[in-house]
Length: 166
Image (cartoon, rainbow, N blue to C red; front, side):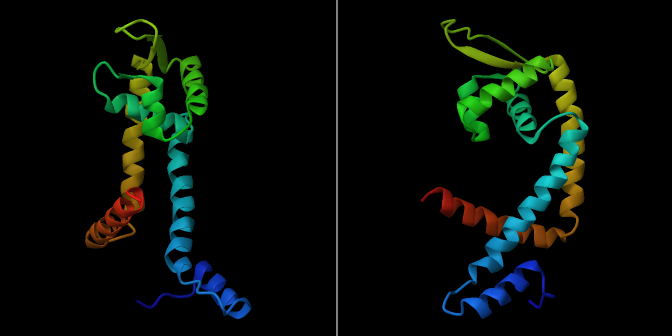
C-alpha cells in the first residue's frame, strides 16, 4: 500500500539516516498505533468531559452499568475490570460518591466487605454519556469502510490474544 509520508515515516527516515544498523520497521505499526491511540483517547475524552467525567470515572460507571441489576460490584472487582490499582480505584470511587453517582455499602454476605452501587443519578448520567460515547465511536470508525473495520478488528483480536497469553 502506498502512503504519503506521515509523522512515523519521517521519523523512520531520520533513524535510517542516523542508525542504519538498526531495523526500525516495528515503528511502521507500533508508532502509528501509538499515535492513533493517543488521538482516539483524546477524541473519546471530549465526550466524557462533556458529562463531567474523566476516562477512569467513565470506566467505573460502565463496569457498574454492565453488571446489570442491582448495578453493583466489589471495589477489587472494579479495579480488575478497569486494570488499575486498588488505590487508584478508591480515589475514583470517592470522587463518584461525592458527585452522588455511586454509593458504598456493606456486602450482604458477611458485612465486612464493601460493594459499590450505581445510584439512580449515576445510571441516568452514564446512560446519557454512553449514548454520546457510542455515537462518537461510530463517527471515529466512519473513517474506515465496514470491510476495513472488520479486517482491522480481526487482526487486532488475533494480535491481542497472542500478546495477552504470553
